Image (cartoon, rainbow, N blue to C red; front, top):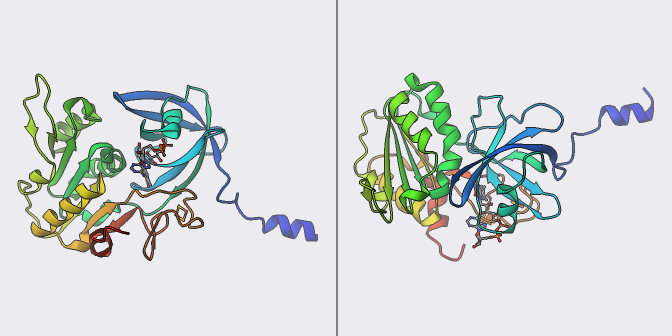
Length: 286
Ligand SMILES: Cc1cc2nc3c(=O)[nH]c(=O)nc-3n(C[C@H](O)[C@H](O)[C@H](O)COP(=O)(O)OP(=O)(O)OC[C@H]3O[C@@H](n4cnc5c(N)ncnc54)[C@H](O)[C@@H]3O)c2cc1C
Ligand code: FES
């Protein structure tokens, strides 16, 4: 083989900072500030990912941000991201027009590894947009529902109009024997459901099996209180998993933006067990 041939045979995959090109296939509005964007690859096959992983999504000329994948990890359909419009990049992503080409790097990070909950009870606790990163785990459970015992989803939103994935919530409860409890911070006309904090629901979860797994995603303060309440209900701290959404720039362990003491959350996380996070979360300056 020529020197050139040997070089190209050993050529590495595309460098990690080079995005793949995906085209916006369609967009669904989930509520007043959140949209789900469905992407198709411009070339190559679908992106394989594990529930809980994120990608770095880029609008060319605007910027790049980390967003969790919210679709089905077992499906071959479009790549889905559910995006809350909070700033310049998330706005440009959420309102990208059908046909527009976006950059995708990843998938990156650790997953929920929900299969560890097989044979036992699983409780998922979501706050706000935190339901989006948990959706792939719920879809994975639904696909093999008989392998799990009791499954509960506790979901807290700011108001009834902020509730995401209403059709999914109904289907998970009615078609897949998942106990779905929704609670809002503030009610609105016509709301007859619960008002309060999602942590209040943890005391009401029915646990049957000895083996318990808890997956938590939402604002950091909500995750910390939820984890403490779950441990008090008998879930082992190493089986309480949280998704940590700190600032990220590179997603591949180069820039240090995501560092939490010895952890690089883009590599070691975002999903980590509470026994590793607890000493770091209780330190305000970290
Ligand atoms: C691993 C990971 C997964 C994520 N998954 C999702 C997701 O599925 N859907 C989604 O909508 N967002 C998700 N985010 C948050 C998303 O990356 C930020 O909202 C985005 O970077 C904001 O960029 P911007 O330019 O639109 O706004 P900016 O102008 O940068 O910020 C606007 C506002 O949002 C706040 N903000 C910025 N970054 C974050 C953050 N990471 N967490 C909380 N508040 C933030 C800022 O403090 C500011 O108040 C995730 C973040 C991480 C690290
Ligand atoms: S985001 Fe750059 S090191 Fe983690």
